[in-house]
Image (tube, rainbow, N blue to C red):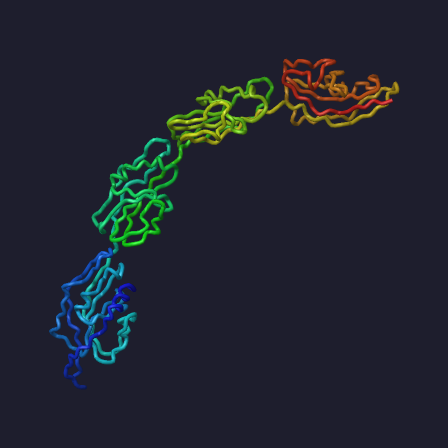
Length: 472
């Protein structure tokens, strides 16, 4: 309403005081009568084009009052303007007032009326006056219609995705020009297709993952900010936007793997995963496979099925960790080959979570005790108090090894009791090392005069050593 108020003040209209004096005395007071207005109601669209009322008439047959004029208020009675004549009323551009409702009144009053000012309310009049009936002027905003259709959910997979059932209800559409606008979910303008057919020709797959909003836009006159890269919130002019239709552009989904983590010992015995499973309830993509990598995502194998995954012998891969992924893709996918890295895949694809397969080495435990220092003097010298922490011990076969300080095997006592029965005085001056070893069948080189750390072949592990020093 403030725009209308400013307009009327600029016009400089005021109340023309017309002398329509009646005869009255104290015994016969004059009853004021403002007459009856006819015309309207008026309904305009705020579109930048001037909107004036016309055809208003005043029935003045019973008009009584010394002064008269017209009053324009909002629908709460706040005074917006005081045009002096009917011609002035019909010269008011209601489009400039923006959206809302105005009421037009005819007023008669006697000298001394208080409260007849723009910005005040007719309820605050004090004095002798009468207001006619009012005529309503409704100033509606532009209407961009109502869109129906969607929401649309597409998978970004390299295949074109178009909307199809979208429609516009234009039964209440107003405005001189119309177009469609496609934005992201922050209302940044991505495209301005001029027609609904053009909207239906848009390939939303090409936009990548995210959400789009489709609006219908109507406007009149100059509209600034309607261009790609701008934001709908920054449009300026006479315009209206419809509701929007959502287009969700979802990524490929590779499903969810369950199972593991698996912990195997690299001991020459085949180790396969068994309880691994794929939840494919949300799986998308034209092609699928499994991928096995190391813990740096270097591709070790590409088994095509879950059965093929379960046939992989992870023992043969040696010590380390493997990751098992499920992969889905559409179209061309580059980089999917052994020796490449998953981070270097290129194309439309998605990876599931991964299942870990730990390939652990054999563990010979930890020896506690010593070191020992003996004097070679002809008196037997035996170690004692040695213990083996076997909390992490694995392997099919265990025994003890005694070497010199060059790791040359001197003896192979089968038990700790046998180790503690060795007379180190007999070995003469020098240094011995006591070890614990665990191994699998087929170990080669575990014999006297062999080298414990460099001469063995097979699946084995050696513990720490305890030093036995023999001095004279």
